[in-house]
Amino acid sequence: MYILSLEQQLSAELNRVNFDKLMVEQPYEYKSIFLNKIRPDSTNPRFLPVVIIPNQDAYQVATKKITKSQLIARYDAENKVVIGKACIVNCFKYNSPDWKKANKTIESITELASNIAVSEIIQVPTIYPTEDGGYQILTGHRRFFAMLYANGLDSAAHFKLYLSRPALPKTKQFQENASREDLPQYGKLQAFKDAMLEIETLSSMRQRQEGKVLTVKECASILGVSMGAFDNYNVLTRYAAVLDAYHHGYAQPFIKMKKMVLSIENSYKRKHNITALNIDHKTAINQLIKKAILKESDTKPKQNPKTYRIAPITSVDVLKTLLSVNVFELELGIDWNSLDWQDNRQVNDAIAAVVSYIEMKNSA
Image (tube, rainbow, N blue to C red):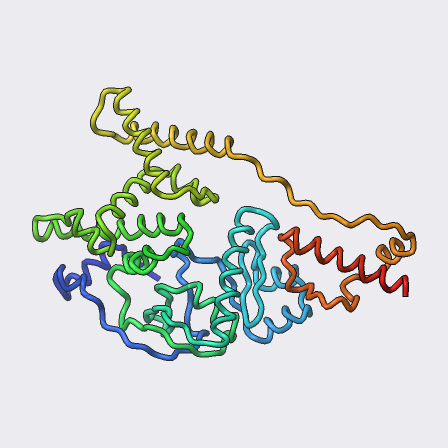
């Protein structure tokens, strides 16, 4: 299938309307649509690579009739997340950076799904029609995945449906997500870059047709952010080292990172007695930023490793019982499936409960 370039898509839109009308909210309606007609946007920087499975397979996973390895083989799900009704499985390599990031997203999805099960979503996801008769998500991937987890692939839900594909889809994604505090920093920066690609393309086309480019103020207005926020994003997306750092879990506030970038830029200009930066200068500055981030990370205090402990056992019989029984089958009142095995406090409490239960039974 031939895919139009961004410039071709915008050119087609501008043949219908002028620049001013292109920025106006496009017509939409609210409609109930089956989830099996909707697909995620894999180009969204916040997109979770998923395999969506039907209800019957999700039930088999949830009831442990399909193993994780069988699931990965059946759906080619390696380095993805499998999701269905009451089923969500992280198939990334255990304890890898991607596995950890996926786990955080999974936690937020299941938490949101619990709310969906008892109440309506206040802000529904937005979608638009595709040429094959289906729909693609524009904004609200996490909400969509929570709907799948709560109600399954064959359920229906309300969506904000644009009557056609938005002229600037990445810009619309950024507009909705920029002001939200709960979103990952990397996602915001990458979304800004994607949106600016659309806006810069639009600005170039406007210059060719009308002889004027979009001003910085107009760009900020289109994105729905203040001039100060626009400048912050603009500085932070100049260098690949910054995006790469946030992508791999760097968590410093944007303002602190901006100060570091500007300080390194200004020092470089003074050292080389220049006022404007070319590509070679920016490449060198990118390396300096990378070194500064690595140096800062190395000076951070190291977290103590998680430890798991078993209280001293004075009875040989208790020790023998502990080593021979399946503790998961003991009537302890512990929900082992919901236990957070990454929380050493929860695990230690569960171990203590097991030992205490065995001691009580042996002394009876």
